Amino acid sequence: MLPLLKIQLKTSLTTSTLDTCIPPLVNKTTKELISVSNSQRFKKSFIRTKVYPNNCILARMNLEITQAIKALLETPQKIVIVPHKNPDGDAIGSTLGLWHYLIKKGHEAVIVSPNDFPKFLKWMPGSEKIVNFEKEASAAKDLISKASVIFTLDFNHLGRIGQLQPLLEEATATFVMIDHHQEPSDYAQIMYSDVRMSSTCEMVYNFVEALGDTDLIDPEIGICLYTGIMTDTGSFKFSSTTSRTHKVVAQLIDKGAKNTEAHNKVYDTNTPSRLHLLGCALKNMVILEEYHTTYITLSQEELDQCEYKKGDTEGFVNYGLTLEGIKFAVIFIENKEEGIIKISFRSEGTFSVNEFARNHFNGGGHTNASGGRSDVSMEETTNFFKSLLPKYKEALEA
Ligand SMILES: [Mn+2]
Image (tube, rainbow, N blue to C red; front, side):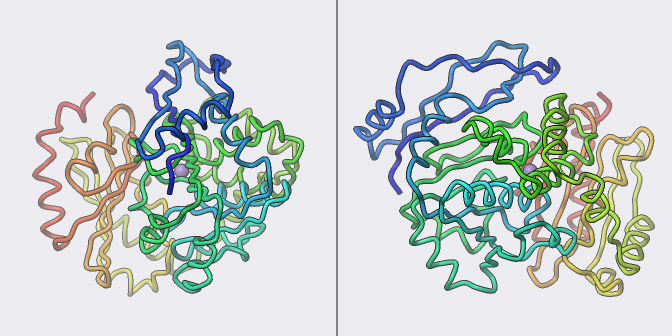
C-alpha cells in the first residue's frame, strides 16, 4: 500500500452554531498534491487542513479531499467497501448507500463485511449482495487482492475488522476512510474523518454532495443513508444531531426515502424472545445512585434461555439513561465462545465514555457512546468496574 495522499480533517470545533461554512481554498491542484506525496512516497505524510473559525461546523467535505477523490474516481475502479465487524445500522447503511452510488457512477463495486449483520437490517436494498467474509472467505480474499480502491467506513483502525485485518494490510489498493470515530489511525491515503458528524451516513451524503452528485440520490440510496443516521443518532436525539443532520435527512426524504418504513423495519421487529431478554436485562439492572451510574449484566446462560440471536441486545444499554439523574449506563454481556465480556458504555453530557473505555476496557468510540471488552469473569469485571467509579465521582456529577 503506497501512501498517496494523506489528508485528515480532525479538529474539535464547537457544534453549537449550526450554520455551515465554506472550507478555505487550497492553492494546490490535486496533481500537485499527488506529486508532492509521491516524492515522499514511503514517508507517512499528512497534509493537514487549515484550522477553521471556531464557530462553525464544517458540514461539507473539504476541498483537498474532494479533489483527491475526484482524481481517484475519474476512471472506473474496482472498489471494495468494508464496514466494521458486527456492523450496525450506520455501518450497513453507509456502505450500501455508497455502494449504490459508486455503481451508478460506473465503478465495479462490492461490499465485503467481516461477519454477518442483524436481521433487522436485512431488508435494506442491496443487503443481499453483501459478501460475508466468514461465509465466503475465498471470494472476499480475491476481491480485496484485486481491488484498486478500498473504502473503509464507520471505523477508525484496522483492528475493528477482525479476520479481515491481515488481508487489508496486504492490499495494494488506495485506501479511503470515511469515519466519525475519535483518534483514527493513519492507514488510509485519503481520510475523511470528522468526529463531529452524527454518523458515517451523514458523511456519505456530504461525500456525494461534494462530488456534485446529489441528483443521483434515489430512494434506495436515500433509505440506506436515512437508516444509518436514524440508528446512530438514536432517532435524532443524541447530541451529535445538528440542524445540518436534519437538513440532510430532509433531502433524503425529498429524494424518496420512506422514513416511517425505516423506523418500522428497524424498531418494530421484536421477537417474543428478544422482549424476554430485555425483561431479564432490566431485572438485572444495578443502580449506583451515588455515581449517577447504572449497569446491566447478561450471562451466557441468560442469553441461551432467551434464545439469543445476534443483534438482540442492540440498544439495551440505552434504557439505563432513561432513568432520571443517571449519566452513565453500561451493559456487560458474556460471550463464552470468545471467552470475553463484551461491554457497551453510554453517557449523557460531558462524561467521556470514549476515554473510559480506552483507559480501562481495551475499547473506545465516541464521547457519549463507546464499547470495550474484558477477559476476566463477569464478577471480576463488574467488581473492577465498580472500583473505578470513585475516581470519576466528580466528573459524573458535572
Ligand atoms: Mn457510526
